[in-house]
Length: 369
Image 1 (cartoon, rainbow, N blue to C red):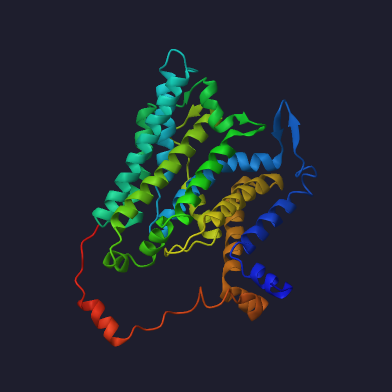
Image 2: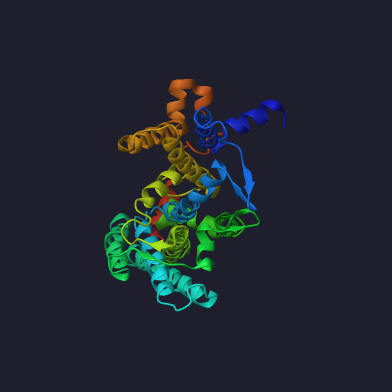
């Protein structure tokens, strides 16, 4: 491969602009915090701004990974924040009732109950979307609203505090000098990538998102795929809920995971996954989540007033999305920078021959879901 070919492949890569924005945001912090990139070892643990970004961004990465698969099927899940709150509330409520809050068996059972509740919420969302035919934004809005009430009922409207060392490990502990949450995120991301890129599952998800009816006609169980991805998204939100409550050793049914669904959707979009469904990028989502978390850190570092931080975040997200648009880059930087890798992303499919189209319409519709 020649140098020009390598450069063309680099400039046409879908992760170029998200990574460029991430690097830019990291560099912006240096004038305000000269030791921003320094990482130090204290008490056998690594500390520093970069470590903090990964630590506090872990719940968002998990939620965004699950959201990626839901969006890839052409759906959306607004309930992930409420699911995280329910999971944390159940786990902390169970642990607080134990005589020995540090008993490993009690902590594992509490985590299991919380994650089971999360999966049930995901199955409910998938049932409403896939079986009942309710629009995803409406189906998931039900738990988004009601879930907060459920979390408040579990905690009796109070903030439940606990003192459990094993539970604190999940979101606030360290292992091998790194935050334990980093290893949890790495395992979830690795398993997701293995299942979606090393098996046919990823192709099935993309086909359902690209054209659910065509997928059904060729024998893909599209309804089961949708139910499965909603359950997986809720499971990721449940793990994030355990991290959030573990990091503070408390369950706040009202504020835990509040608006994390919006940040997750932004992370998915920044990562290059289309909200219309179809092709998706797990790596892009991880980068997008790091961009959102780095942006949050940068807002506080440079002293942006609290009242305007959401406006500042929205402006940066708009810039990132515009930079990812081939049409925008073509108008601003010229056709050379606006072009993407061939006609893969922009070419319209050729019209089907008349006999093929007629045969498709005449074909019997199999019920395979």
